[in-house]
Length: 304
Image (cartoon, rainbow, N blue to C red; front, side):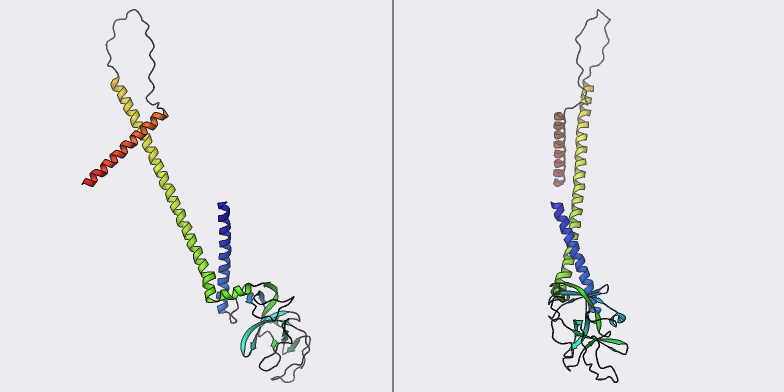
């Protein structure tokens, strides 16, 4: 169970780390983009701030939409029904709008132009090799126009950013907007990444400590085995020495007489054969002597 839980935690941390890195890259890119739109691999993500496109085929306030960026050639060959993201001005303030190209055969405002076609055909006004599109929000009345002048406002390759192809994530736009703020970036990106590396450092230190502990225990175990073997060896050596000292000196043998059958003596057990009980006792006594000698040595050093 613990292994499964650790695996799940690692997966979640990895996913969040990847998300944080992607969002960090997108936020950094957005600061360099003239429209300050987070984008990656030719796709831009935006937060929906108005209800102008609310509807069955649109999106809602707080949604995050994904817009595919397009070049001038594609921007010059769009059609009615395409939902495009473009720059426009409202009260002389630059804004990013995402509206649908609509079919409206309206009269063109020709201020500043001479001898040009005066009507929009199927939602598009072609002039000078450039296509100008009439746009409108699904949830608004009337086509887009300049609020300050009342003239129709056209989207063209000069101000079109990309095409929305239907990808939206409900309510994630508000999260994206918060992430783009300084506080959101610090709390949701920088702080989690810092905590992740601190956690990984803790795991590394804990693993290193556990390894050192295992090595220390192994060394103690080896030393203990060495002392036990030494205790048994010393006991066997002492036993052998006692046996050798106790052996009687050889005496001259008397002349052979009538053979007498003497009872057969049993051979003493070999000195190398020790029961487990005796071995434990010998080791305990040896360890006690070693501890006593060490204590005595420490006491002598303290006196000095």
